Image (cartoon, rainbow, N blue to C red; front, side):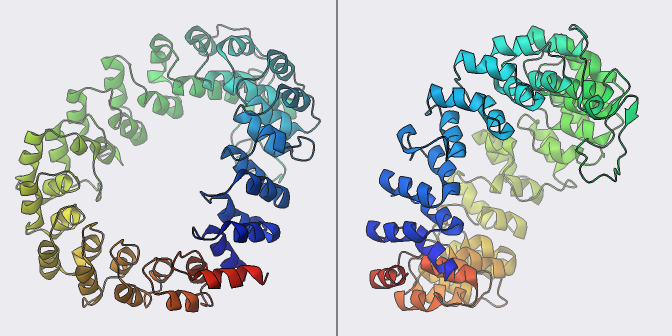
Length: 504
């Protein structure tokens, strides 16, 4: 019965008085559907938070609870969620800053807009995890102060904080600050120490390979990586890492924008394919380097280049034949000019025509030409395009069969007659049944056919065009997903809804 109640909780036509009854018996699972209701009132949200405390956080983030509804002593997580939304009170913030529960202070440290005295208290917290969380989200002034913190965890958080001033970020990776005195490794082990990759201790939380010889080697590396990822770190502070022995640092550098052309060229010659792959996906590299990378056979380089929104069209065409890109609208194709679209649609290479067929804003003439394409993968790509007629979609299926069946079923303009025609296709295509079961134009007859497919059955059970008696029968289906979907179906008769809830 619980899965049926979960479905009822999400049913959009459930009257307010029945929602109240469900709230009165709700558990964690039922609360998931109730929290997601668009018609949940403030009073109902308060009642639900009292009944299922775990739901309070979601309700707070959804704006359905106010400070007056929450007791920070008995509902600390909800109160912290409101503070995170700037809807809490300064008194709450001061209380949590002195809370003996570490988790509460740590969550508070990530909240925006805290009173100055609370921020000062958190910056002096005895647990470095609280200070590090504050450093990750705090203001430029506080980040500047915490950059010189004696613990590397705090410095790493400052390096990752995009509000940290550029000169401070540069100092963090150029030895411009006093040396740190502690790191996570020497907090636990006397240096020199190197953590075994296969550590046998079940309670050990040090990452594999973490090490400290007194100079906090691995922690320093983590600070450098965080600063290299931070877009605010000045270019002149990061370019020297292009030849760094750490693969990870070079890899991080390859994704940055605003670097000199020569740095990008050196990264294009990096021996690690992953570095070159991230470089290939970087829109900041120039067209000449992209054309060079189009011939790079390293793992994932060419595929990442194909996804670069700035890749030259000729380089993208060059990639079409032997790069596993998949049926997706590439960013460069999405912004192609009308002239480029016409050029791509006339390409002798079907892979190129498939690229442009993924667009959903093609001029009718180009759309129709691609719908008549002799290559199945081109037709499959264009099949969901709006504006195609029933005759065109039928012709696609008649020519290419199961290869295009599911995509034809996904066309938003597919008529009820076409959907029924697709359910009778031999051989059938399971993906097509799933598309039909969720289609807005699916009829009762079509949905009954979809119920025979195990994967489409839950989708069909929740479709509002399914006849009410069938929906009622599915409430006792052996598949819990089907029963839950039926319970959430707005076609479920009100009398049945009432009966299910009122006999709780």
